[in-house]
Length: 275
Ligand SMILES: [Fe+2]
Ligand SMILES: [Fe+2]
Image (tube, rainbow, N blue to C red; front, side):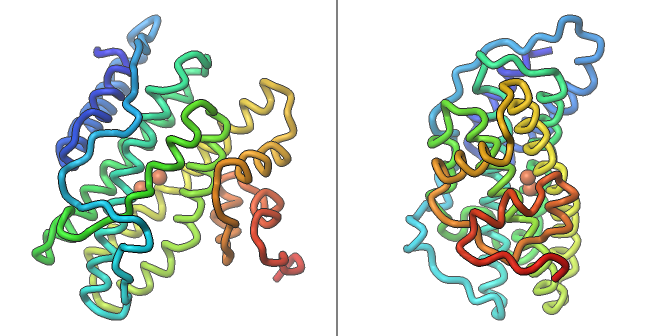
């Protein structure tokens, strides 16, 4: 088996979206099929690129230049699916980057298992979104997309705890807040294909947030640091905005993120408990 970090580097260096996800899914299957038999497991070495390879299209624009989406029009909903595809492709790279980078920090094997599984699921999510776009005579790349997605990765390229705080515990947790509203929107538009795809995404994203919380707490324990205070410090350092309610408290709790982690980082007063 190719060492895991070399697999990660190969995914990060592949530009076409469908090729990247095919490689990612194939490597994940190979990892889980062979790593139990391999003793010791070879993680190998990688020099992850500062920016992962991406296709020529979509054109990447500054957030203020990305056209506003009107969710109550068919065109607006199509643009929304395109934006989700873009987020999922970025997530594939983010999870493989968590494997390729931070080589000097020794982590248990379960850390690699979790991120390989998450990368495999993100690859499936990207493909599901591409299928939805193609069913409507569109494709990933047909519209411009957000240029700032990789910023969280470059900001935290030397700080594994900052990366875990900002990527799974803030950005992916945000996905848990907004996805139910999107599902309702596509139900209203009778788009069963999109509803089914978004339900798969919603059910699988909880575990990605949970992996983030698990390994963040693990590292806090290793260094004898208070997790809540450290989470607040790192999010303020690396995330350039306040957190926006409404929060999906139930799914966040399921993923191991208690309310006193995120409410103090929003600029809205926390409602009394039980409401
Ligand atoms: Fe995803
Ligand atoms: Fe995810």
